[in-house]
Length: 340
Ligand SMILES: NC(=O)c1ccc[n+]([C@@H]2O[C@H](COP(=O)([O-])OP(=O)(O)OC[C@H]3O[C@@H](n4cnc5c(N)ncnc54)[C@H](OP(=O)(O)O)[C@@H]3O)[C@@H](O)[C@H]2O)c1
Image (cartoon, rainbow, N blue to C red; front, side):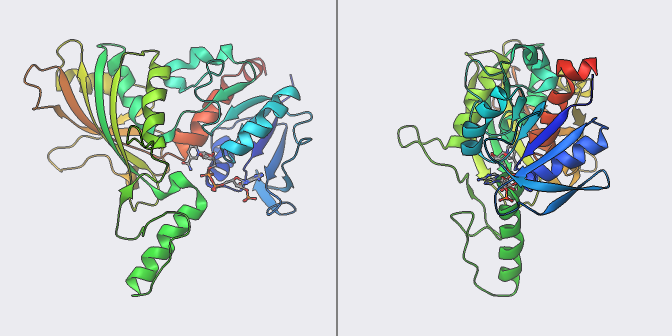
């Protein structure tokens, strides 16, 4: 079988750039690359394996002859063009939230539920990046000693909102240091030297924002456990890249921090960074550019005297494991890749 023709919808974005870098780094074989973005980028080029590839405007005809379509151009674009790509014969791996909760669409973190990939009907969804950051370290525990309840707070970086948000953080910080005014364009609030509740819409009935609702629903779908109770607070922090999460979980049976440390040490895609002597734990600066989700601060939750609860802290490069890497891992597991 020939190497697949791969299209990237959103090739000029923060995730798009990581698709290119990740395919390169992992030696993902590509017969031909179709680089797709908006009319703003059409006619420019991107570098792919030392060759300049022309960026085309995404339209209804973009997917003729495409085997794998990696989507990262927003939910609206995915809703409109992913079905067109499937009709043209491509398998779509979608980074947006458009299809994640569709019961016919597998929602996949390969280390957790790669087995669901085979059930796809054309579209496979990549979970929310905050959900991936939290679920990677929770899964090895959940599969050994069911987690009944999780409470987590996220510390989410600018890069989770794309290239323009990263620029806003840099520019607003520079302006602030220079004593100049800076009007926010991407976010509703001042970003430099500030933090704020996640910028997605709030459900007036529940008080939860969209990001939090995604984490709750996607956890249940990926763990295939409708009973797991999830409480979550999502916060945007002035960090350029890599999300963090402070997580406390309660298991069905008693659990010790040593058991958790052992389970996490053996878990694929997870790296334990837990040095109490040096006070060295997961940080965004260390997680940036890394495939692994870093996890540390592994300790008993002292608010639960029954010994069923543990607290941890995780950091992950959400442009990689939270988006591009997770998508390429899925692509590597597609049957046509196995046969190639
Ligand atoms: N950032 C993350 O960590 C992350 C994680 C998980 C999922 N995601 C999802 O990935 C998607 C993109 O995120 P991002 O962070 O890479 O955003 P971004 O940096 O803002 O990039 C957006 C990309 O979409 C393209 N695009 C926008 N409008 C388009 C249109 N009408 N037609 C074709 N292409 C269009 C842009 O092309 P132009 O340059 O031509 O405008 C650009 O390539 C979103 O759905 C996001 O929710 C992001």
